[in-house]
Length: 521
Image (tube, rainbow, N blue to C red):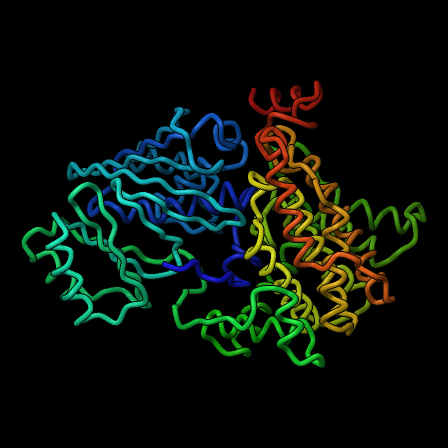
């Protein structure tokens, strides 16, 4: 199956979630939601294994992978208010989940190797990875290679041999309109993976399992907001192609509307309305943060209100837009760290920079929610290019692909907000990304607060500066597409210790170690 192009709502602006990390918490929820569908009866026990060479072995508790995965196994969504209590709820429901560190040469830093047990005696094995920003991919189920990202309705048909699989395939081609149909093998056995736009009806599933040599058929529901389709052909996948193909009079927001409409096979009006709902949620998260948050298991207390107080007392450096943005960014990070609802944009660790900066500037200038929505769509378009050609996973590329990406996206959104051209927006994004090349990820005590807050604030200030530079005609020198490629290469060259493992940087300073120990006590 061909890799599906990024969606602004799947890959970039989202998920709506609770927890410290989209890669670790929200992605874990989605992995768990699919895992619980791999057994036909009630789950009773799950063994989860992490490779010590990956990021999860050291961070799965501090960054919420344990509560996220268990929440998904219970059927919760990433924003469910019960997520922080999922471990206790599972125990009360009789579900035993064990996490172990085992060497097995994991293919990715965020690899989950699972063994699922049901009350009917089923034992199912599966391997899934978190690819960044809440996105996931199942790579192996029952020893069969698969490619399941949660963006289709999936039907898995387990067959005794190739002859049976061919018979099943013939039946499916005759009766089912499908997007993709693939076979994979485990020795002589075959697995048919069917991707459809809607779930298979019971009658067809019954006819499949009635075929001699079919062991079982499983249906998996999608976990992403925008479903994929082989007919969802996007108009471009690079900034250069976009600028060459689109009318030069179109804004970056209008180009984003064209893209996402084609990607999701929905109208541009639906795309705009969907983003506007997200912006309203971001605004509510900011209000919640400014009102004050409390949470015991975190490093930083409430601070977002201090900016306004400093401004009133004349102690802050003048600059209304920047000062408001700093307070909003901080408010969003505090909501995240207190397990409140936020939007990962593009990740939870970088959830403050993009919305805090754009909404802060909007409020400083007295602009509308509609104008903020347009800016967020423009930012999302830049995020698509990063998702397509790089990653949002700090475990793969360091913080440059999280806060750095958020800064780049925010810069483009601000240019759109100020009625700049699409080219100016892309130039601003390029400059912002160039300024953060090589930024490492080393959260103290695995809590995604320090130095994450400061990096989000820096990302916002960088975005404001680069948007102003682009609007003023500064030369970006290196185009955005080349900058994204360079960032990805640099990320792969960073030592693993500096990519969200808790093994380098500030996290292993004496103070960092003391903070970690105090939170574990």
